Each structure stands twice: as structure tokens, then as C-alpha cells.
Image 1: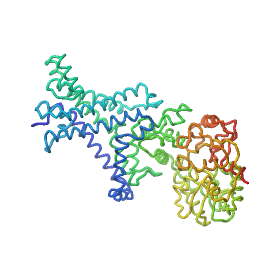
Image 2 (image 1 turned 120 degrees about the vertical axis):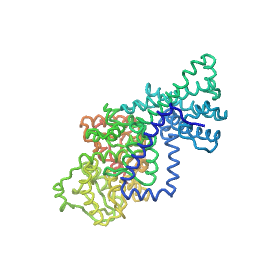
Image 3 (image 1 turned 30 degrees about the vertical axis):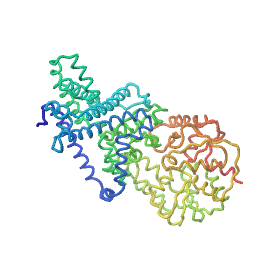
Image 4 (image 1 turned 135 degrees about the vertical axis):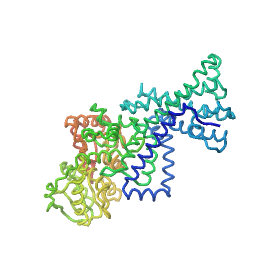
Length: 596
């Protein structure tokens, strides 16, 4: 009993290249992880995190649950290819054991079992013929949809698909022919030797009725060679193409479950995130740079492609609003914003120590109290928000320590967004010492940018950090602040850093609900549009920012609300620029105007 034929060579070579490359890459990436990350992996393996990771691999890597949420047809296409191929391998393996028992069979013996079974007259099991044909049909339906997606992506809910690299094109072409080649080879085998299920057996019977035995014999070996060559070529190209995600997404899920994450400095874990990108293109449509400004080559899919090939340009790294709309749609859950940040850090982080001389004696904070208020740079530039917060504090009888009303130090996030992480850290250290020295227990800020960095980067143990929308709602529910409800209609714009960045959606809406009627725009909550004035993008012009603002303002105005409300000083300024009417106000302003 032999399981070798010369036509197996392309497959054997391809599989050897694939698994050797994967072993080398993964081995190096894991070896280069910091000791703290390695400890997280060791501690995480014997916990429920491993079971959770296995469940996520099934639901996302095989069934593609997140892609189904984007578009059911697109989800079916990905599921049929991934889960269908997995089941073909698994059921084929079971068939081999059912026919031959628990004896050693080399890899090519399992993959080309129909060939060896026919040539060596193994026992015929009709149930497996049926199952394997059914699974092959499932995968072929996915291949047909993949062909259709390249021709008309809108049918699957995508206005645009990705641009391919040469490696992508080679791998994709091979993948497209793998399963049609398998179908053809198994059909001719069924025509010559019998067997086969409802698909291969029926087509084989037609072939035997209409083609001569000599022609079938002439086709037999070339078709198996073609199938083997398609597999071998795909496996060789896979590690150097978008299809590296097939394998890399699995360890990424496990590492993420164990608590590993990308940091402000580039690290080895980043490789797992970058190469887990399938370049499916789902992240392209949500990007307002593409849909509003017509910029088509800087989206996350191309950023990751260029970073992976180590040809990332500064213009691509910086040309991003970092609004999080693409990350919200990413079916792999890649931390796109952090990868952007540490790419910028690698390129631009050139701190100048002399810039921080002004920090000496800059503490102009006022007042006392366990509640501290940090306005932030942009709130200081929107004085109506600052005045509204002062009125709210007074009405609630709150004694407040004003951290920066008379000037202070930036929270550091704008510097971090531009890639100057070391400079940002200097500011963060100064502010953290200031907060601790004044003994506050609650820190309120009106700026979502400040909120995010305080919560994630400052390590303010013992100090609760909340946004003013959360604080105002707390006052209302405690009865410390009373407001007058009217028949006014408000629409609310979710700031990127407050909503997608910090998960705060319900609190601002609850506050507005106490004032009047809330009407939602077309894009809301995690799908809300960016105002366009993100401090993260250092490439687009002021005119382009205004275009984005007008696009967002038009959608908000279409609700027919009497007031556009937001909860970010930067968003307020941007939307007000783009909206001639209705008026744009911060949440604190509409609350302060209704205090009784």
C-alpha cells in the first residue's frame, strides 16, 4: 500500500515551504516578546481564556460571525471557504481512518485520498462520498461568490474592494482554481473507477457516457497534477500574501485573550496584528477620507499592507483621522489606532528637552475640593462650555479644584497622536503629579481626548476619571441638579473619542432625554461620523477638514432638530463651521440653560 505518486511533489513542496515559514515567523515573534508578555501567556494557558479563544476561533476564523453582521452574503462567502475547507480536511481525515483504520498515512495520502483509493481499490463508503461532495459544493459556491465579488462588490455591501499586491494575485489565482481543479480530477476519477457522490459521481457518469476511455485516461494524471500544482503554488505564496491571515488570526486570538496588546512603542506582538489582516476591504467604506474626500490609498488596509512590507510612508501613517470607524468594522478586531500611533512614533519621535522648561511654575490651579475639573486645551478655546460647567458646579453646590482654568499643561494626547510619545509622556508625568498632589478623588473633564488619555495612560490610582456627560447625569439622578424639560428637539453627535474611543453612548442621551426630545441621525453610536477636525490627522488641509465637517453637519441637520448637541469642544467647533443652522451647542450648555 503506497501513498506516493510524482504528481504529489508540488503539494509536498508547497506544504513544506508553508509550514517551515510559519514555524520560523511565529517562533521569532514569540521569542522576541517582552518577558511580561510571555508571563501573561504562561498564566493564561490554563485558564478560561483558552476556552474563550477556542470559541472565538470557531465563531470568527471559521464561521466569520462579524462579517455576517456586515453583510450576510459576504459572510456566507467567507464562511463557505474557511469552514467548508476545514470540514473537507476534517471529514476527509475521518474517511481515511474509517477505510484504513488507525495506521500512518502521510499528508498527501489524506489530501489525495480519492486518487489513491481508486488506484488501489480501497473499500467504498457511500456516506463519505456524499458528505465530501456536499462540502466540496459548499466551498465551490464560496469560490463563485468570490469571483462575483471582484466583478460587482456592491452586491455584498461593499462599494470598494482592495488593491492587490503581486503576491496577493498569485495566491488568489491559485486559490480560485484549487477547488474547480479538485472537482475536475475527482469527476474524471469517478468516470474511470466508479464511486463518487451526487456531484462527482453524477458528473463522472456523464463523462463516461460521452467521452472515450482513452480521452479520460489522457486527462486523469494531468488533472491531478494541476490540482497538486494549484495547492502547492497557493501554499508557497500564502506566507507572502494577504492569506497569511488564515493562520495568523488564530494565534492572535489566543494572545489577545491572554491580555497581550500593542503599545505606544513598536513591539513583536504587532506582527501578529499586522499579518492577521485579510485585506478584505471592509474597513474602506467607513473611511470618510475615502467617501467624502476621495482619498483612496491611506486606509487601514493599505497602511497595514505597507507596514508589513516595510515600505510605510510617513504620509500614509499620518493621513488618518483615527476616528475608529474602520476599527469598529474590522472583522479581526485589529487595534488599528495603536498600530498607527507606534508607526508614527518610530518615524517622528524626536523629543527636545528644552521645550519643557516652561513647566517650572506652570501650576495656576485654583480652588479646593475632592472634585477636580480639567477643561483641556480645546475647552479653554470654547469658553461657553467652561462657563456652563461653572454654572453646573455652582447649582450642584460642588466645591471644585480648577486644574487649568487659568492655563496649564496639555493632557499629552495630541502629541501622542502625532507620534511624539516621549514628549507626551513628559506632560503626562507632570499632570499626574499635579492631580495626586491636590488630593482629588474625582476628575471631571469636558474633552473626550483628555478623558481617554487620563483613563488609559495616567495610572491615576484612587482617582475616578469621568466625562462631564457622566458627571451631569450623576447629578441629575442624585437630585443635586434640577432642569426644566421643554418640547425642543435635539440631535446628538457622538464624538469619536467619547463613543468609539471610550464607550460612552448612553449617558449623553440620558441627559438630553431629561431636557427634551432626542432624534437620532442616520449614523449614530459606534457608526457615527467624525467631525473632520481630528488632531490625529496632520496631512489633510483646513479646506478638507471643512468638507468633512459640512458632510457631518448636513446629516445632523437632516434630522430636523432645533439644536445640534455634541459633547466634545473640538467637535462643537468643527460642526459649527460646517452648519449654517441649526445652532450647535455642547451638552453642558443646553443643561446650564435649563437649570431651575
